[in-house]
Length: 341
Ligand code: SF4
Image (cartoon, protein in one colour):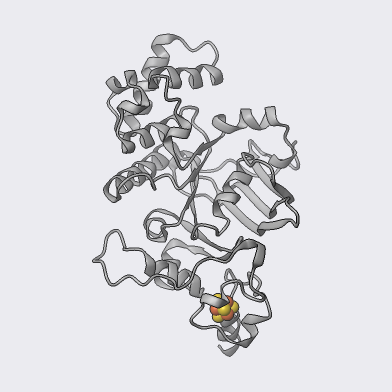
């Protein structure tokens, strides 16, 4: 349902991030409604701008995939969004996605907001040739599209992700893992969405294929101008591809920054640990240091800062008081440094 009537037209067609929002996540809270309920994501505030690549990083269990299923309204019980707004901007109107019924939301998915899931096989029907699957999606959203026009469009879509048009006759199992993943990306782009939401889109493929896929996503973004929200545990991949990054831990955002800022000056100890855990894509591999310990069980979060049992800089206040996200970082250490400046 339209909320307001803001926003001038943006620069999406150039693929350059604009200051115009396409999706605003306001105070989002997701809970598993078990007994007792478990807080999976809390106080999530993020804005995705047209043409921007926003990365969301964190280990498994950080809440990033839960956030993605909430954004796309693909969550299943017991998970439920219990507070907040997902304000989607289009043609000068703003709509809270949480107020749409299932039919309205289904229509928006694919046409405007596309989703690429972790496993390409989830998106592709194993018993249908690619041509039939792409044809179904194109016909659903452009009823009346002729066979020749659909074939041309399918060849174009596959070509965009480096798959020869002849492979349209293949079944998914006849393609390599990397090709399946690229085909699922092409399928997501079939209706020229404004926002593409990707959950670990490159985990199932090797590092070289990861770079190829991400390179293709960047080229397509420049050409088509969609915004991307991409979730991955691999911070180094985001540092090289995203415009902005939000780092999540224990269901909360602990730091947000431009990718270049996060690369040169990560402020949160967890961000620094995550950065040191992955080899950089374009620099010599130095010694990697994993973060000691493991992410907390959401049903039994530590008091104070949820990262404190693993933090090399922990001090007394961290054990009792949870740091709020202030000035784009949630860490008492940052408060102390700021106060002493
Ligand atoms: Fe470490 Fe304390 Fe900062 Fe948490 S608040 S990250 S424990 S220094």
